[in-house]
Length: 520
Ligand SMILES: Cc1cc2nc3c(=O)[nH]c(=O)nc-3n(C[C@H](O)[C@H](O)[C@H](O)COP(=O)(O)OP(=O)(O)OC[C@H]3O[C@@H](n4cnc5c(N)ncnc54)[C@H](O)[C@@H]3O)c2cc1C
Image (cartoon, protein in one colour):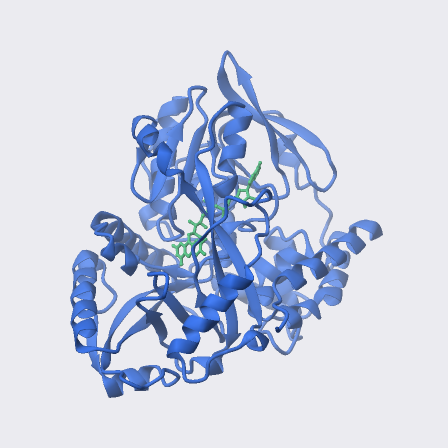
């Protein structure tokens, strides 16, 4: 057995040397900021309380898009920025993001005209960053694109293009990119307090979730990129700070590809709650989503659960348009994510304290804590650029230009490849189990698990099944049956204490059940 040498993963914290930038939170916002800061040459530390992308950033609809629905709201600047970011990502991470065709069916001629005009505007806003022009389809063309669609009264539709990606994989890739650029990124290391001197924030206290060891780190700029947890960190700074955020939940269901045969996605333009809904081919399955359910009731913001009403709503909406609609028993996996929404009553405050756009906000507290909240995966790079510009100003760091617009992400192949590991895929053959599948339901080899532990900072069974592979998101029952084997490999690679390994197996089993829907 090729056994890796044990290493001290927290070694970089032990010399007490101050950091230029400390980023709290390892989701899209924090990881993007770490890449930007490290690319400018700042000494950068990112700490994540649990695993990278274990919050909202692994639970998105997995689209790199301008957001057709924002057109309805007239937010053209937001759409245009996002479409530009889409093209940067397609160029910088062709192993992770690919174009996908979406078809909007029309059940009346007027709808067809209205959607067609809206999508022409989308094309216009994309300008030279467009993927392919939207096109009007006749009834036969829609049926050919989406053979699973109900046909009664269908009169045609519109096809447009957007980007699709694997959210947790992009997060891991950003962590690796930041590391390549010299940043230190550490998971399972929550910030437990903020250090102040003369009323200014000068660092933070951290606690290793595995050993309980505590650290104090000094930093010139401290960035709060903790998503729906941002108020909690703001209150570590100012205990009386009024909460700014309220969570809104969005869920997705994963069903077999037979429910929507073909390689094109379906966009349902009007649901009973006035939103849009997608049915999207993704990694050999179909993703149905999403919802928008205010959750002011949530006391605990980790691991939100799909509500029965949300599951019923998605199944009911799908049944309205699909010929072979899925039922509860067909759901392979279900997951929920939380959007941090800014309380409407704080909108006017924000104008005075923040450099903000409609979709995200960057706020600086009197003691210098920089908070970034909101936004989308699609615009993570642009948000990061704005946050690091602001951090450099606040902390008086030497001004350095942002370089991420053309920065290739870790593993970027010279020609677009199929494998999300990019150039790292070739390294799997060096590892044991490269010719053995973890489970017949998934395309992952056992070497992929070992690679995740050795090179992608996977620390638990859940990290591997949920975010280094997407097994739990694709088929939660099949993933549950991989737990013992993944536990064995993790035991060989990291040699955790037997008690810890047992706890990890139990925790992974609990987690696998959260992704399952019990048929009613
Ligand atoms: C249902 C849904 C669908 C979406 N679909 C899309 C889409 O298709 N395309 C798109 O572009 N965008 C989409 N989005 C938006 C996108 O997912 C989010 O904008 C993005 O993931 C937010 O990332 P974040 O880093 O701000 O938050 P998070 O991903 O929640 O990350 C915050 C991190 O901070 C960590 N943390 C919290 N407290 C601490 C602490 N004390 N110390 C250290 N770490 C801490 C948490 O563990 C967490 O990992 C969607 C969002 C939702 C909810």
